[in-house]
Amino acid sequence: MSEDAGALPVLVSEADAGNGKKVGILTLNKPKALNALDLAMAELMLDALQTFSARSDIACVLIDAEGEKAFCAGGDVVSMHQAMANNTNAIPAFLETFFTVEYTLDYTIRTFNKPVVIWGTGIVMGGGMGLMSGASHRIVTETSRLAMPEITIGLYPDVGGSYFLPRLPGKSGLFLGLTGASMNAGDARYLGLADHFVSSDKRQQLLEALCEHAWQDDSVDEQVAEVINSLSDSDAMPASVVKTHQSLIDEVCSHDSLPAIVEAINALDSADDKWLARAQKTLSAGSPITAHLVYQQCQRGAQMSLADCFRMELIMSCRCGEAGEFQEGVRALLIDKDNAPDWKYASVAEVPDGVIDTFFTSPWDDASHPLITLGE
Image (cartoon, rainbow, N blue to C red; front, side, top):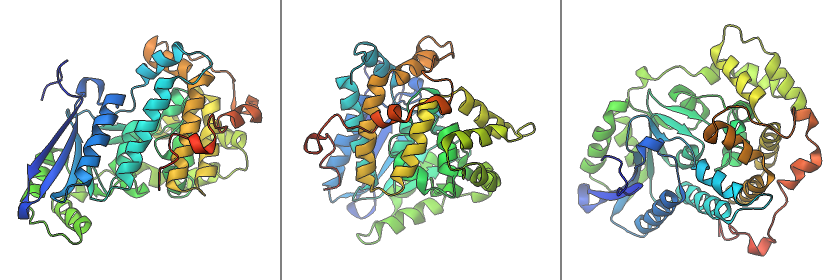
């Protein structure tokens, strides 16, 4: 379907499957915007998932996207920038609403009562990682490019990053959050961020296979895995770059302070290593405040429940909306496009502890937190 002004940003449909079952389908439909997740899309997806959840005839849900370039390249930060520009030094109501709905959607996918299949081809970044990371059956292809590059815009790896980053192998979650480093399909499989590898030209075959399956009521997750594995071609999966660098990542990220970790990463010899050189460049050009938020979220989130991580992230994200760093980062990258953000501090060593503490100070009491009922 082509993208036009009258098209819904998420297409909700269903397909007949075996034994009287159906496959629920959600298709992100903003390919020109690389399917960046906006509030309307999140609301449509959440509403559809709640409907599918209550229906006994829905065997599983498939989430994919129009276009070949991206599953979802992030959140709609341009709209957030406008809201921040209109609400200086305050938490914009739009941001509170957006993040509340987005995190509720991400949590719903993670705790859904039916299998959720994600076709994660092309770019999967930021908000796309939030959608994909919590699905029960996450598919990557040879074109998949995953990343959490929020340090570039003065935000931080939200959408559940506080939960999944510290649970990745070794210190890889901290490194990926600090550097925004790109991951290929092999990396995603190695890190546990994806479950299956399928060639990108088999999307239609996947849908047909799900519809042709004679669904049984028991062991539905295993049935979905069998269908996907029948299409898998793991020999074509690229080698994991992160796995190659794992021992180096663990070494540099094991220092006992963030400034020491950043210094160690930047001191690595990357003359013949494009992936590492790009990671160093992103870290060096990124927000020092974000670096601290990544460090803190990995430490705190490692001991927290999924629901508590999302509650913490809503506090952090709303504080980012009033602090100015996020607004400046989006301005530099996507509004003025001068790629010259004026960060508040020149290095991580200069950021006072008290400044970071404010990002974890809730604007609500416990009873009025917008995500208070999450997990109940």
